[in-house]
Length: 416
Image (cartoon, rainbow, N blue to C red; front, side, top):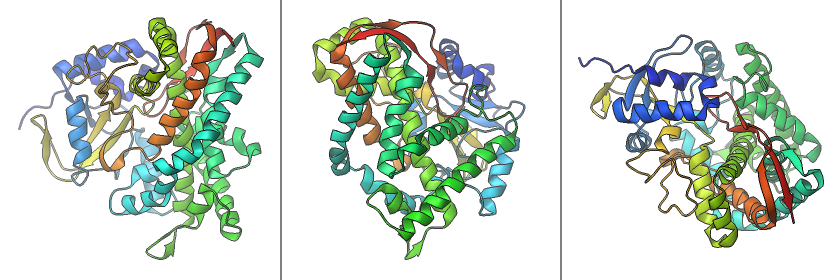
């Protein structure tokens, strides 16, 4: 049997703190793409996995969704928490979102919300996104000339959009923000509830209790919002279980805003780092579409997903045994030198831009069109109004191996 390649650089993929050091992590990923694109990772506290760092291999695995499945290990979490979450799901009492599912159940569940994110629905929502973008840029003027863009603007604008789509009352928005930051920031000392695995379970329980009450309300009194569509959905004529409805709400409410806020904060940071590109965008607003794609490529709000082999196979000639898991590093795939010319350059006119930030294949992000539209609306409002803008301190990143980006972005500016 071929000896397993175990490159030490791949160990960083299981270190939440490594994601706070952007340059250091990218150096390691560049090394892996060249020298060990399929590397075995065995670190204390985690079940071993294969790190997949090449764009082509990631896409190939995503295509073969019958061979490489989401279940039972869709994301990288520590052993102890993984055991607890898996036991809860098997007992029917744990959250099981779209990212945990495989076809045909995944396909049936995805259909429930699909119409709310199709182009027709997005066109209907565009005016609202533009209105909210103006409201938050106006707030920048009111709060200026300095603020923490990530915490005061970037997290709130997409939160308002997605929770309005769900139909939640505005008074509940702060609670949803806190729960989402605790969920995705479980490895970050600033956001985590505490350091024990039970803390994450408590966050999920809080989500469940909130959305169980919402489900009961929407079933008793249906309304014209996404929450009502989820609560009253059926599969094969049967209503969803309380756990399935809660799971659906959680993925929409949390992933539907946290990833977009990371894209907006990270996108602004790229413009600040590359003032010539900001000037180009100010001079030619027609570049906004490709600029948004480049922001999404560079920020990579979702760092990874995992898949588990259902039969013996191989990737790039490396044997992968049945039951072994692979980590798909989107962060690495989006800087692959074989796909992107000058991959570390922020180029607002990059086209084509085959980034992997929304995944690929049957699990392509359900809310991709909404995320693109929100980012486009926000920067279409902000960019023409900028007179001056610069960093007012050092940016800080979330410690995470899953979802996150810039958590603090102090800026100094003047707007029209």
